[in-house]
Amino acid sequence: MTVKLTRARSGRALPAIDRLDRGRRLGLLAICSASLFIVGVDITAVNVALPALERDLGAGVSGLQWTVDAYTVVMASLLMLGGSIADRFGRRRIFVTGLTVFTLASLLCSVAPSLDALIAARVLQAVGASMMNPVAMSIITNAFTDPRERAQAVGVWGAVFGLSMALGPIIGGVLLAAADWRAIFLINLPMGIAAIVLTMRFIPESRAPHPRRFDPVGQLAVVALLAALTFAIIEGPHLGWASAPIAAAFAVAGAAGVTLVAYEAGRREPLIDPRFFRSVPFASATVISVAAFAAFGGFLFLNTLFLQGARGFSPLEAGLATVPMALMMVVAAPISGRIVGRRGPRVPLVVAGLLLAAGSGMMIGVATDVPLGWLLGAYAIFGTGFGLVNAPITNTAVSGMPRAQAGTASAIATTSRQVGQALGVAVAGAVIASSAGGGAAALHPPAWWLLAGGGVLVTVLGVLATTDRASASARATARMLNPEALTA
Image 1 (cartoon, rainbow, N blue to C red):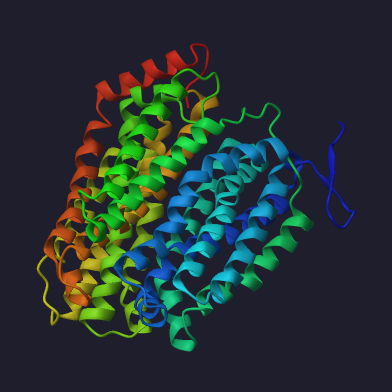
Image 2: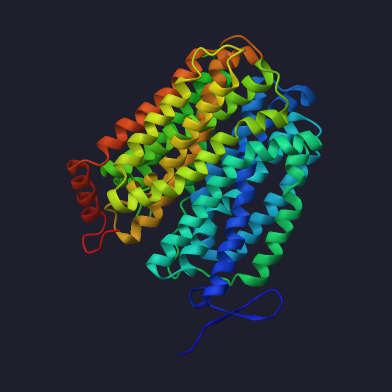
């Protein structure tokens, strides 16, 4: 049997990615997971630094929102493009490019002299991250060809990425206590450089045999939709909801959405196939992703302002206070995966939604002197709910889809997660900006009611997505997409 080889930067020949031995596959998994750990930490660690940014750079509420959302909106907009160009030009090449861009952008963030410069560097960070997240998944799925091993590897990757988001506030608090907010970005430099060296040395190059065609119109429509909508929500309280810029932004978002649906419906290889949404499980999983991650993003944003603004916690104390949330996320995630494998996604989705609603609901109407035990209980309950929700989202999204379409369906669900987080921060910040300023704004009940509503929505859709009628719609969609394909 002939073994195809690929040549590493060092000149040493490596077996093709689908012919690596078990040790090399595990090493590849470790490198990809560690690289994505950096991205996940960066998504949430910045939340702890928001009060420091407010003081040092003179940022208002909208500036703090853009510091978080510039990263998530751009990354969400470019995730599917990143996967597509990697399939065409080489997954290792694009992964290393993404790591390089992300690392250099982190350096720019650490030396940013103003809020505008920081936000611009965060945008560049997101461009790099968009070339890492989907490409790492593609590398892993192509290296682990055995279905059982692949499922385990994807589970490890997902657990590491989830853990990184949970630990972000804690790591951010520790770095702020030891130095200042710039350390949150400087820590990415040695980790990024190490990941680049290891990737070039140990991960073979690979490409898709038949890469999807580029879809510039669809990609631009996605960017315009997310950017305009986020701008309108963040700036609406400051410019006025009836002002010309906000009305124009909503109009652009609406036009981009209509264009995306109409244009993609006529393409042979669309960026986002509108027919996917005829599957009730897929459509529900997309909305569940947005709702759950909006609750998560909004919860972190509000909680940071509350702990450091209203309660007077230091950044380290605020980060340590979220330990129960992080711990329960780590504990609940593998439990959810096992339940999904044995009993399907309904139970984890329903329980997750109820716990997300309960954790957010416990923050409604709290006073600045609320007992710490009450807060820690709310964090633990919310973290358990969020830990339970990830595995069933992906399972529900690909349920009934043809195997050839399962990767695209999963990618859309992943993009929806980032969209949700960006919208959660935008909406929560808009509610704050419409009320009293400072830490007291984080006590505003409507903001927490909205987050609790996201949990209720997860519960309702968790039931609707797992009915017999929903399963029938998924099978019908699969036959329409590819009548001869086996289902995932």
